[in-house]
Length: 182
Image 1 (cartoon, rainbow, N blue to C red):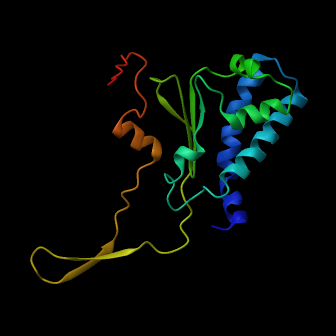
Image 2: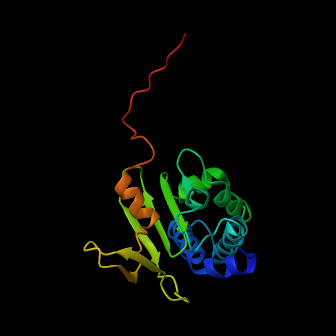
């Protein structure tokens, strides 16, 4: 996919994600307006550069793991990079941001979950712009009367819906670890 095309189509999604994270810094009050603006612009630039070859509007779930911003026992390196640009230490970022945060930045949808067992909430949602007529499928009618032509049914579900259907991808905090040695 052409870089300029990819960058242009991800602007709204990245803006939503950056705005969400920046609000945490603003609410806690530990950064001034200039720092907040620099953090926001830096993170927007970092995410645009990081995602430019991993943005697939025709297949939104492709690359979703790569575009996931995750803060748990480790700070997301992209958020950390933007924090460093305004002089924040990693300890300050941990104080300003939720300790357990997953933020999915996908084509047409940005969603998040706070806590491992939290609900998934949608920050931004849009519909793809259809520029071509819908694909047509040919099926044979059950009566054997010949083929019938109709629009294909889009069975696409969002990455967030896929997670909710398939369940969590990481183990619950309440689990026992067993080690096996030989």
